Image (cartoon, rainbow, N blue to C red; front, side):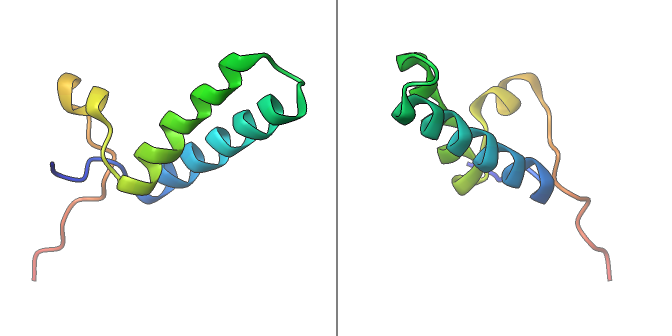
Length: 65
C-alpha cells in the first residue's frame, strides 16, 4: 500500500489514539476508548484504508529535481 498520510496527520493520529487508550486504561471512558489502537496503528504505518477508498492523500507533493 502507498503511504497516504502526511507528517502532521500521522502525529495527530498517534497522539489522539494514545490519549484514548490511556483514558480507557484509567476508566475515564468505557471500553470504546480502546478504539484508539486504530489511529495509532494507521499513524505508525502511514496508511489509512479509508483515505485510500475515498481518494484522500495528506502527504506533501513529491519533490521534482
